Image 1 (cartoon, chains in turn red, blue):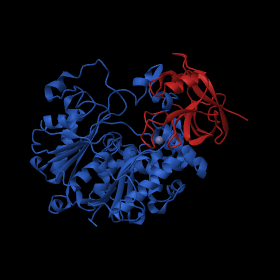
Image 2 (image 1 turned 45 degrees about the horizontal axis):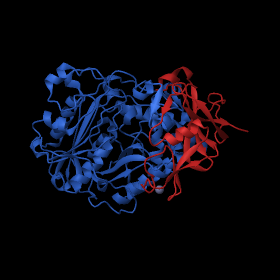
Image 3 (image 1 turned 90 degrees about the vertical axis):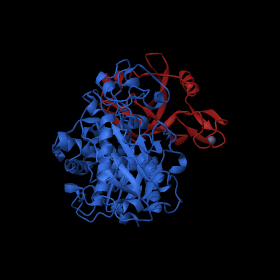
Length: 137
Length: 442
Ligand SMILES: [Zn+2]
């Protein structure tokens, strides 16, 4: 799907750079052992920025829920309607969720609980890659 | 204008468990309420701007309370008035607005936002304001801050104010970043998939239905009850402009916005303003209206770590809100005569209701509870205000109605059982400001 191209900022640039290398990373606070996504300037647990690092993920997750979008506010997605948006919980930490259009899954046929694997999709405006997820097995 | 407008410090909020009974329980009271008319969209005349209608609502509230403007010494305002459509960047503001009002440095003040400075510049009768705070996002926040401020003695007689504007255009659709082919900031992670405003709620609702074996059809009785209650709210948009009954069939046939959320699970953005008058219980004793006492207030803030919340996040947060409300008010769930928790989107409501254990309803049970008698006439009145769904998008009908119910002047919406204690709060289950109201101070 022709998604908007994310424009990396100071804080999330390492995340988007990793996407361009087809690697999924999530920000982690070493002192709290706490991940957070989107990345932030400070850890939401200890409010410190001193111990933030980037942790590489396996790219495996599970679908926890989904919707079928019939009326999106995003102009470039309107021609694609209706489309799935699923919530994926990462295997490493189910508290970390990401959104997915679930390429390869028919509209409104989303298997809640199914395993998914990350892949990377190139967005048209800038070529920035973004993570997407595909049902496996 | 010498008034220093402050931002509420964290210390004004009751955010954690274990704080015990609120130190000002029953010592702060709502004694007046006022609203403006409603409209679907701003017609660009100065008389119907959010600024003008907020002035009207404030004057109505003071009159309702029998309080003179010079007696008012505090104001808490929610400065956001937006409903998802922005003012075009290079478009000048209407000349008639410039001619009618005293402007602040921001020309859009009074049109698509509102500041206390603007209100004071245009309400010269408010000569005695010594305490002023902007409580963002939601009137529920302003209510919490106003209650604490009066309790703490920062103000004796305080206005609590919220206005809404609505311009031409569709709610968030194609607005700002949504209309571009790039997206910046955290939105690149959270918004790039084109989820509409109701989408996160619909995701949580879907997960809820999957977990507990429920379905969207089970929402119908709740939504039509809200619409019915809303038509009995003469101040509301639907009663004033579109007095249409909603049937179960209408609800089930409505188009999807983000399945499982349909058109009627969303609310209608409108123009309207409201103001309440809060004062000390002592002073409230011999005032014009029967005082409605505040027994407790709470704030709950998001703790989720991912791109969207999870069902667990929302259920845990809703439970936490319930426990905090009861602890600080020194009451139990069975003490509630009614509940007016947030409904905009309708699929929020069951989370709030279950967190409160309203009528003994626990996790996963609210949709079954919706199939019972939840009407104004019944033993467990749910959302007697009609909420956002029944009165238009304000996030304040719930509070307005709670006050009226406990004063016994909710008119055709008056619940048939005795109204003794009620609760109202908004908005997300994990991001809300809630208040327990009572007909008596203890
Ligand atoms: Zn930390």
